Image (cartoon, rainbow, N blue to C red; front, side, top):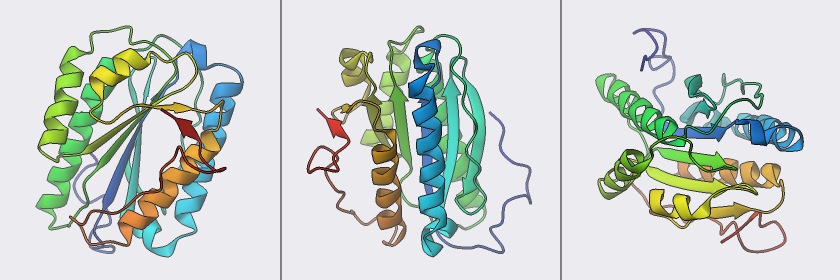
Length: 222
């Protein structure tokens, strides 16, 4: 796993604490058609929401790993320069490898913060999938549980129609959420609002989040 070469980050120009958010995005063949179209639209809305918030645009960093096959589509960048990758549905669902790659990417990013004297919030790893893993995933599940126990990151799993929620429950410490229909825009609206709330807090503080299953704007069910 590679990081940006030393000197390419803007820590000197922007010493704000960082709020890292890694998206693990299932782009397997079953996501073709309307699902991948709505996911692309949701990603763009996510970027636009963060960009419109002056503080979040400086503090929130976004990275994307797609799987089907596993690919680091974008490394961690502040929202002010993040460009959502254009996703195409192709391949199988190597979810285990994607999670392992994501955990490592987060670990390396935290090392970069520390070496540059940058404070940071607890990273979020946000998995979105519509299928069943086509590779071994028990190692990834242990990494998630170990990482959560050590407060190294917070892991969230969202199942789109067709997702194997039984497997997601064995991977995620938190209860996996089921996306209502293809309400990706609602999901990313909630995610951007959550990131903005966290970015306004002090690193280490607990920030109350809106329940995504409640109200007319709720985008998920359990």
